Length: 410
Image: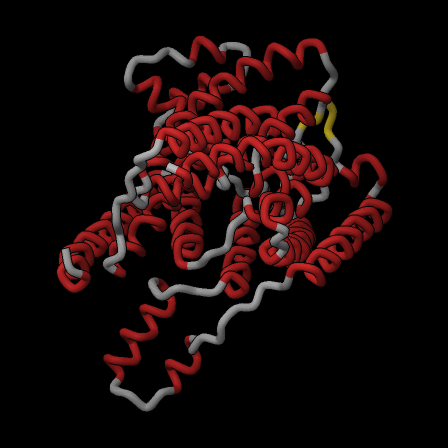
């Protein structure tokens, strides 16, 4: 199918899904306001992620596999900005008496020796797959058959991860590493600053050797609105600039930072997609007759699995994200299916998906929730997971390179 015919065929479908997303939002607004807000936040996040080339996974994977620190530098800029945003929201909501400290204090991850083992397993899988929650969803929804299979193996890996985690933590001790509770706020802020400075020092040394991210200059919304063109043309260009056109990664992180802070303001917790993705898998398995609820009887998951889809705020965040990453390629007329024709590539995506899903459960999150989000909310678990995940990527590198070589040879 030619490019023009493809655009004429796909764009109406994109508008249909846009209208459907609007209908879902107003329906949620009518039954549960916070679910509607989370759906809208997920939609904005999906639109942003699919329009740019920014990758959360590249923060860990790039330096080890490719000596590439470009996205790592952007990742840490975003983390610092988000950390500041979270502190501002906490101070503001606490001033007005609407911040729930009990809810917030329960958020940091419970850490145990198995947490560190899971981080290694997660990193090993990341070396294969190159994506965790947000990346798997984005690529699977956009017609990449390999990542559809990775999504399925991710969900089964998550089931195994939950069962293994619940068995092992009976024999170990879990504790929260929320730094303000451990050190008090003044020292916690100093520790946070120290680790940020150390991280930037390491990253800058890598950039000196291997280069820095450089975005291309783009037109920008203000310059579009300032043009002396008919209002209809300016409006159309402004709409494309806001919702459709590709954006550079350094500009995308500004949007992502704002989205994360807005989510935190409404939910008083950090945003993440990997654990909601696992829950989505459990709900689908339960729907088709696989009784995963009985496997999780020792956890709080059975209640979440049986909960109404539209009332589960995390699932509505996930649904909004799915709409976002689907609508933009359709409106651009660039949606396309991508098959998988090699057994080695098939092995890479299935194994990678399973290991990432398995590791996520022991870490209680992935790149967004357990590294980026945990660090931003002053949980030392976010810092602790990094060296173990990097170790996993390093250990997975030779296996990934061997399988990739076999794939390219054939």
